[in-house]
Picture 1: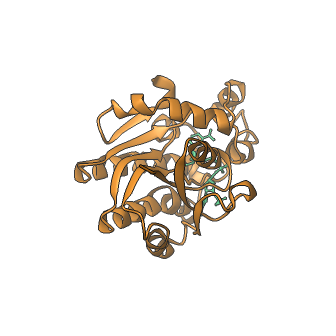
Picture 2: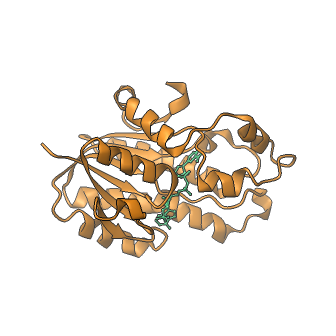
Length: 231
Ligand SMILES: NC(=O)c1ccc[n+]([C@@H]2O[C@H](COP(=O)([O-])OP(=O)(O)OC[C@H]3O[C@@H](n4cnc5c(N)ncnc54)[C@H](OP(=O)(O)O)[C@@H]3O)[C@@H](O)[C@H]2O)c1
């Protein structure tokens, strides 16, 4: 039987690599994102959607998945990080943007999947070590990923036939990491120095690691937060 995966955020980085890998593994890929990379054109089912425009998310999911009865995987990958800075210097509207994309868009998506009565086997929401670390400079990103962990736990109580995990994927060299983390002040923000010195995966390596750990992830209770580096 055909296997289906629905993923958000395939324009770059981790999500793009996951989409390509699952395609290679024989999955039918459904994606919501702002950008459709050239090398995925014609190979996946795609609906263009800016997840920040929350009112467009529900109809976009309906359009994308109108003929789908079952999803083997839902990967809530799309995420926003803005420049590292002290929380004291971070305007609430900037943190709201991260809340909208990293948390509320995912709520709308899960609500749409439930309303559409699509059978969903597994949900993996891409969280971050920042959801639990509380390092200086990670402002609304940390708050949004902590909220995402709780969102996933709450939905796990209601989606009894679905296994949900909030997953910290490890350090991946992507536009997000390069643009906002590696370029930040390492004296003011000690985590930047640690990240610079740590080994980082390519998006392809990170996608392979996820694929290889899928069975292991299933062993955790639904609703758990799991750091892939710990398993
Ligand atoms: N890189 C790391 O070390 C690391 C570590 C922990 C967690 N993460 C998480 O991993 C996930 C992927 O990030 P990444 O590292 O691959 O960074 P990235 O290359 O910046 O990717 C961000 C992804 O989110 C999508 N996206 C962003 N804003 C969007 C919007 N408004 N509407 C729709 N899609 C949007 C982008 O697609 P479009 O271009 O199509 O908008 C893109 O595919 C994020 O949730 C991030 O928080 C990354």
